[in-house]
View 1 (cartoon, rainbow, N blue to C red):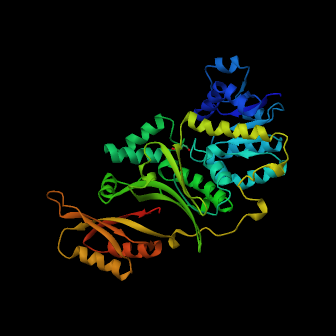
View 2: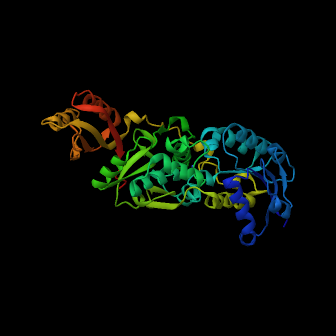
Length: 436
Ligand code: HSE
């Protein structure tokens, strides 16, 4: 059988990894697929060394539209990232009847509905396994492996850079900015690293997972998004003293009031497996009604781990060449006419337990006054930790753990506490999940 022809857009970290894996494992892939895959056309800027491309008779261009308009190409693999150009290229490829594989979570989370409509109209596949959790086949797991289940919730560490930073802060007391620089040098961080540290990257990925889990449209703009930039080493240590780890989690859950869709730092009990996922590794915990909890773990970023997902998508897509749309797994896992309109909940209505840290004047009665506020708001306290004052200081750190409380209620209580003269500055709040 004739080889399937791939056009590659981008030869950066993931593009380079994809070319390497496809070439290195070509025989293994042929054995699985019964057909060869050839990269025939690559679009990339400023490639100094073309030896490998020349040796494999790959055409190189700086104009990505040449690749998507190349009649020989069956599958366009978009690995340039970003929104506008990537979207134009993907839509053009689809219009030209080409299948698309992409690792671009920003593109799928924000322009997915338009891209998927175009793909359905043109009878082509859009595969995006590498868009969520790098090398972990979580899209396939949720969309196909768990198709028998009603998914109840998903909680995941889905940003490797953020997890790497939190791990280094906890284990080595390293400085936030210094660890971020290292993540950038290792090729983990996004082109704009604020996407990693402010939670945008995780929100893109969670948006996709929520659609697959609950059959809802991709609604990135409704995802509550909070990053890790305000987490201090003190919080990491106090959480540890109380038996918790701080992880940056994406959480989506179906409730009687709608669907929770939120990304934020979270305390989780240190005995949970997912609490022990460290460094750049990702993990996604999925709770299904039939299977119970399942946990998926692996490298969430990096050249070859991400390429592993991209190449798996290419292999799957080659199998679809010439097959009617009715035989494909729906792009979001649900039949288009069965998509649900369950609303995404406002964060104000979400219930979680909370970790609170405040700087309190070290004098009798302050703790009682603060506790009284929580009692008045009907918020139960689970634990209280008061740290020794640093020598010469008149303020102490007061740390409280609450039981579950709605966001609007805890916000009101925090505002009241912050108004006390005995409390300096603002109260730090980190949500807490038991994940049981
Ligand atoms: N910047 C992302 C991360 C890369 O750190 O997880 C993979 O999407």
